[in-house]
Length: 335
Length: 126
Image 1 (cartoon, each protein chain N blue to C red):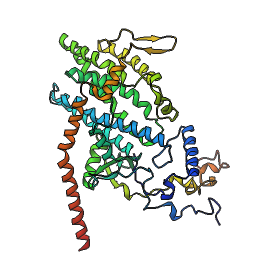
Image 2 (image 1 turned 120 degrees about the vertical axis):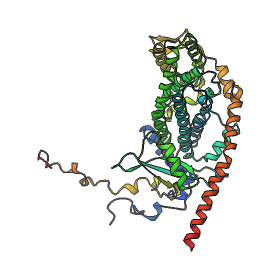
Image 3 (image 1 turned 45 degrees about the vertical axis):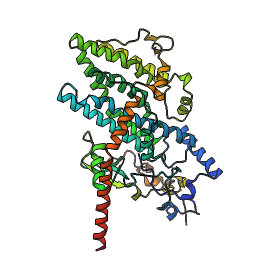
Image 4 (image 1 turned 90 degrees about the vertical axis):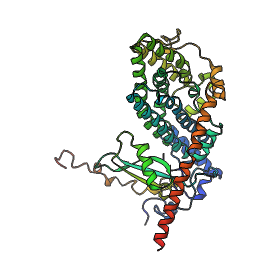
């Protein structure tokens, strides 16, 4: 997450307009990718690589920020002081993850304000999963176990993404994410070992979050045109379906420990392909939610906008104070 | 005498550091309504006896806020005992496009490494 505006690059070399510079840059870029080394912010990179990364990293950042909402919503109703403290720590982590990722995205040349504005204006996308409602306390368990579990599955390979700042941000995120999944698992385990009503509540939450969590890995490989290029650039290391299959295999094991079941009677291990398979997913629903027509899209954006507006006076006050202090200091120097 | 490197561009010429140059990413400048919140680089010392290491960056209106934000953002799990924050535009960096000439001087100077001297192999405490 180095600065976007470290200043040493001689201006005449940064424009990248001359054809020879581009050819040299491309050759250098190709060599680094072939060596499975890392691209750093001030390296020459193809415009499409920059654009793809900026889209992916900023969407990832937005997802973390919007992802605070379903859980923040439960802080006041968490069943004990300990649970409230844990949930607050988790929501604070999500904010942190968003900030790491915004920093990484900024190194690609997009200002943070522009990214924030795009999110608030509804121009930017974020993970479709956060447009589903968190109906009961058991949803806190299911989100931690399934949603954060799927996120970890996706994010661990991203620690080796070819773009240095993104990989470094993901290392930090992954370290913190494992606490999230375990605390979710524990919530479900406790409910599962509780009264029949509590166990039913846990099962109901797993039933509702299972399919949306599987869809977090993105469309099937045949339907994911950008995946191939991302893999050629070493941004993605595994295909959507590959990661989804691995995730299903892990969940099959873990759901037994929980004493619950997955709402999918077609889960099986294919001995021929050596891969886990699952039942059909509703990709029409996925596209609808992504297009802004999910159960909570409007509510999430509205909340984000309100939080931004409510915080305006804090930003203004901090800037005014900083300006005043700096003016004072200059006056003292002058005196 | 220039035994190493490109004779036309000395390895440590002033052209390597250009404080006036814009950022490398050729992105259009965006109008800022929160422009006063500059970018800061954060360095964290994880424990006594170790160096401060770059942890990441953040935005803050002044140094005091940058330090507080850095604490909240980069040391939520006892990752540090000390933090430095530095305005990003105060950092001068070497040029990644200099194609290695800036770092060429050590090339071919194996004799700077202990492993260059092999005749003493087997001799104790050397």
